[in-house]
Image (cartoon, rainbow, N blue to C red; front, side, top):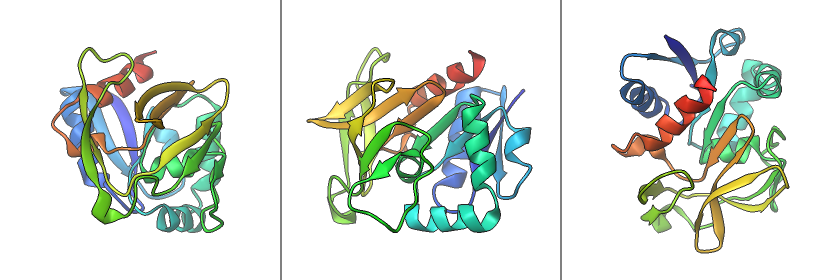
Amino acid sequence: MARIGVLALQGDVSEHVLALERAGQGKVQAVEVRKPGQIEECQALVLPGGESTTICRQLESSGLTEELKAAARRGKPILATCAGLVLISQEIEGDSLVKPLGLMDIKISRNAFGSQRESFEADIQIKGLDRPYRAVFIRAPAIAAAGREVEVLARVGEAVVAARQKNLLALAFHPELTEDPRIHHIFLKMLEA
């Protein structure tokens, strides 16, 4: 049984746990990660949506930052959604409050689609999926620039909202808030590989 950790410092933790267990159909154990040593016990990791400034501070105070970076460098599959996408970036446009982890060669525009009031759902075409995916965007970021090794998987207009770089799958939206398990299936396939 695959053990997948969900960073449980703030944000959509229980939603990801349920979505992973549904998608895994009895082959996945999703566990909440809060303290050092737990990341090492997991085969993969989810960095959920939430408030990126708060999660960044919690990461530092919990002592998980270096463990998370080391896991990413070793090739552990990581799914980063919304605030998680902000955290794994190299750079954040015009923001000095959040210190990104520098795991993925991307530059992020926070709140790219507006405030909480401008949250929306959209049918988007994601590379590798046979039909559109109904994505939930909540005060969503977007990828403003991506390095050569980053594969763009989806856009809304010109904005990049899904990308992959090796073991990192980054999304501007919230797959845990839908009944559609296809994004979590993609992530679980990364674990098999």
